[in-house]
Image (cartoon, rainbow, N blue to C red; front, side, top):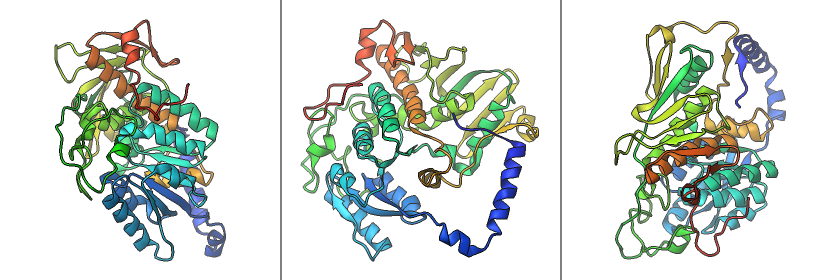
Length: 421
């Protein structure tokens, strides 16, 4: 669980920071931590955005890149070489080669979801620090599996749930208010995100000549190439593989991994899970599924964009561009001096960097990212089966339901089997 500070602790820490800033500048230079050398795995639309915005400088250096499309690979290498002209970035189509390098301290994983767990396990095995984009995994079994692997490796892990650190701290403000009882008892949280995934029925296109399509598929079922899944060359849009359950969890998991994460954070339920899973009341509906925790709190898929918390004392809603409450005084009245505060970070990447250098833990370690994506997967199972389910969060199993448990994972292609739990 994220450590909490009281308001007095917060002000005391601010005073200490001010004194530290006043020390002679040579002292800070002598203690500057070393640059963290990165391998970026999957520099597509999101991976290149991370490189440009967070990981080319500011305490990081990209020393290796990996992509199965040679056009994207060359573009990423060129970008890294331009930023660090005195060194040459290593480029490869196989992530294992990048992770094996001794000059790589940490990896950034921005591949499609069906690759995440495999690459997390490979990085942990090599004891590399890990930043992995959300949704953290494709399946419930994968989410269960990566937790002990990362913990055993002792590496610093950050899930790419940036709402805990960025967007003007709106989500931090909302979670602080809720944790400090501003809404009274929270009864329901409504999370407005996209639809559950569907099966991929795309046709066949001529093969992209610069792409290792078999490697793009990796553990996923074999199928012909289509540019909706892996666009041709360097592209500036998010591909549609997010819609299909062979590769992702649909819009529900894509943005849901962000907003369900905020719901769990506000409720103080990091690292825990629900005990009931309910389908929508309306047959065929794409919203309305829900999960219920052991204290009776229900999280519902559907509603206004973002997360809306309904408590006995009022309603609070938050999204990337807004925070609001009814009555409005819930936001206007300051928290008391002894309120429990959440940490505020300069950015998600810097939060990871500080943790690598031995400061506080990251705001979204592996068990938190796994718990958030598990909510998405449980809801998607409810949409697939359309019936009520009981969930055992400690053992990561549906209770007495073989058909539901079969959906905790999928049949991988030969050579991509996961290790046993």
